[in-house]
Length: 109
Ligand SMILES: [Zn+2]
Image (cartoon, rainbow, N blue to C red; front, side, top):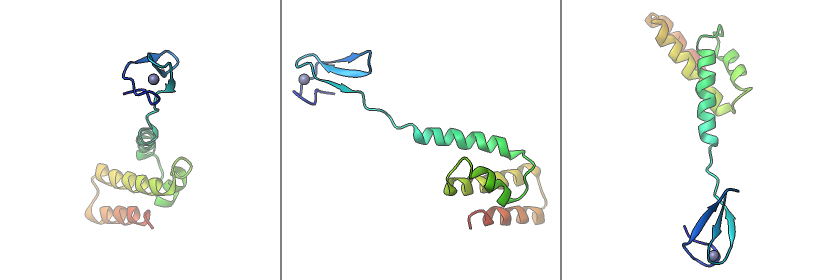
């Protein structure tokens, strides 16, 4: 870290979330970390928990709900994930499983 104005490495942190150069007095803001992808992950985890046991059986219904909160790509991925996870939790027969997977598959179309 060095001053973008004079190149000095004598930098102090101000309580206002700025850096200040001790040599020339130049101030600049602390670069903000982009947390949006973490927020999206948390949101998806919450939606997963919310809908994994919800009485919504069809992919279309699930998608309709998820699309209120997520963009289409994320909604489709999450809907498929929920349907497959449910199928695995319920220990279904092979035929039932196949139907679930087919439904999950339709979510991507
Ligand atoms: Zn400086």
